[in-house]
Amino acid sequence: MAVKTHTWISLWFLVTAPVIAWDVGYCFMRPRSMVGGDLHWIWKPYEIYQEIDYVYGVKALESGDGFTNAQSLLNVVETFMNLAYLYLAHVSGWSPAPLIGFAAAVMTLSKTVLYWAQEYYCGGCAIGHNTISDLVLYWIIPNGLWIVIPTLIVIRLGQDISDNLVAADRIAAKAASGKQQ
Image (cartoon, rainbow, N blue to C red; front, side, top):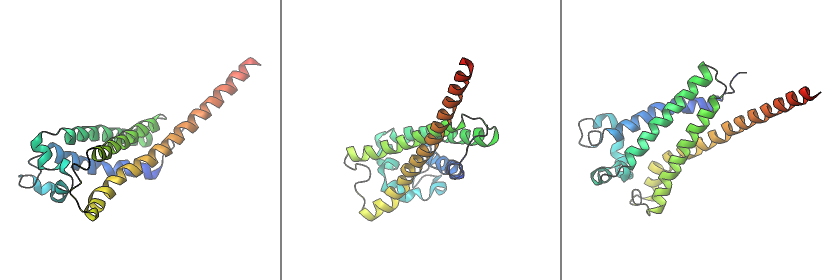
């Protein structure tokens, strides 16, 4: 039985891989990736972002805040899972592949919700200094994508997995009733 795939999910997993790799590189290479660092040219747009979100900025780095790199490490795990899903679903045709994609999307969603919850519970400690327009443009919209799209992926792949389990249960029940006759 062929693996049911969805182009939009596969594109999300494929397109986000280099974006995440770039972000992970910035986080793991701090302070060299930051303004004034010899590698900053690679991450020039972070010049703005490290001022918008202090988790990415000098303050977090100097205080030894480990959250930035901890979430980056999880980004690496998620991305490997996303790429594994792509390979297993599209190349090898492994029927449980949607479970890998589902788990990866749950990781992304959970980590991003944690990131937002941290800001809520600390009173906006890393982003509260922004104007509302900067906050919406540079933090809420870009980070919101990492909640909305993984949520949609969890729903879609969850439904596909559920449908497959129901179908397998029906087949098993039919086979069991056939043996009883």
